[in-house]
Each structure stands twice: as C-alpha cells, then as structure tokens.
Image 1 (cartoon, rainbow, N blue to C red):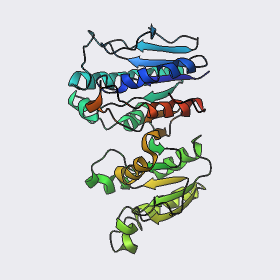
Image 2: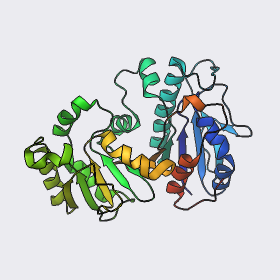
Image 3: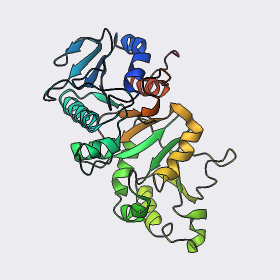
Image 4: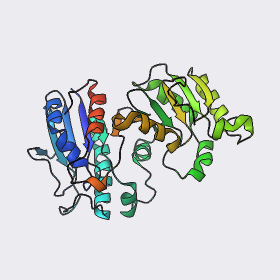
Length: 314
C-alpha cells in the first residue's frame, strides 16, 4: 500500500477542478492506497471528501488541513492574491513535513511563483529548489512523457545567469540521481549544445568545449552513455536520432520542444530524492479557473506514475 500526499497548490487556480474531475479515480485508487490532500483552511472544497487531523492506517482518499493557518480564508477562483500565494507555499511546506514523517510519495499541484514571492517568500524559485533546500541535497527536474525525458541543467533562473549557474552545476550528483532513478535504466543520453549550432566548434561560444565537456566527462566516469553536443534546433526533429534522455542547457531550451511533443501528458519528476515527487506539466491557469474546462490529463499521468499502472480515461 502506497502513501501519496497531494499539496493543493494555489487554491484560486484550476487545481480543485482537477481534483473534482479525478475524484472517482482518486477514490478508486484509495481502495488500495492511502491518498491525502494537504490543504489550508479556506472555502474551496471537494464534496464528500473526509477531512482528518492526521494520517491513519486504513487505505482511502482523505484531506488533511494543516494547522497554524489562522482564520479560514475565502478565495475566488481565478483571482490569485498574496493570501493564496502564502496558502500554496504553506501547503507545500506542510506536505514536506508530513512526507518526512510518513515516507510518502508526493504530488505537487501548481502554484504561482509570482504570488508566492508577492506573499513575502523572498528567493522562492519553485518546487524543485524548495525540495532541495528541505532535504539538503541537490535535486534535478526531469520532464517525462510517453516518448521523451528531458532534464534542464538550469531551471528557474534568468537567461543571463545560465552560464554562471552552469559553472556551479553538480555533475557528480546528477550522475548519481540518473543512475538511481527508477524511471531510467542505462539510458542513452543526448546532450544539447548551449549555443546556436552547438557552438560551431567554438566559433559561436565556447561553453560546449569547456563547461559541457567537463561535465560530460564526469558523467561518463559514472558509466553513463552520452552523445553530443547536439544542435538544439534539430535534436527533436522526427528524423533525428532518438535518445532515452536529453540534457538541455536551460529551462526553455528543453521544455519548449518537450511540451510541444508531449502535450498535456508530461510529468515533472524530481530526481535526487529518496521518494518520488511528481507534478503536472502545466501551471495554475488562473484565466480558466472556475469555467469547468480544466483538463485533468496531467494529474492523471502523475497518479499513473506513482501507482505504476494505466487508468481508464475519465
């Protein structure tokens, strides 16, 4: 029996619509697993969902309202605020605390980095980085779909800071995270050049022959198979050589082609942890919140990864 925690993310987003759409699936999975929605005290709810004060031994789908949030808040779907940003961040921290107690796997529903920062959480960069701080170890974002796995070597940093971030990148820990991941088995890895045309042999930048070359050497010492640098503008074309895993130099270099090719079925998996953390490959979608058109495919994909079986379409 697995234990799965779900942090609610921003309560003014599409998240509660996703949970409502997948409610029958969550109840069905709850016959074999313990699933807990970690939520704050507010007016967005799921009908018929039993609320607990702490985890129990029995399987089922429940919610747990974390303590210390003060008076219940009233939120309007599609209207994020500092209060909803703080609620989303506190829900994540509460889920992390409970994960440490239970050893559970974790699904994090989308939150808004903008509104978390506006809520006063200075320096917040995202789930991946927060998990790294909480567990005091390097973590790595892997976007995983039906055909593609992509790891951006730098995540939520301004483009102007990418090279500086790469100089500090922990290649040794990346190698360990890849080899220990249950989602990768002796992967054939293609790594993308940072510069246009992979640097043209040093004529359009030298990061391929310096930073990337040094990092790739470390990965090869870890017995990983890598080829590259690949020109990023052609690496994902239909007739290009396929790889089990792609390493991208920065966030959009890897995530734009990934999202185009994988659509809504992509899952964000955090490598480097002793448990599995997954998240849907989409954002808060405040613009459609409350309109009844949110697509639960991403959340369903997350659940499928954690229970290791395909589910029937909803």
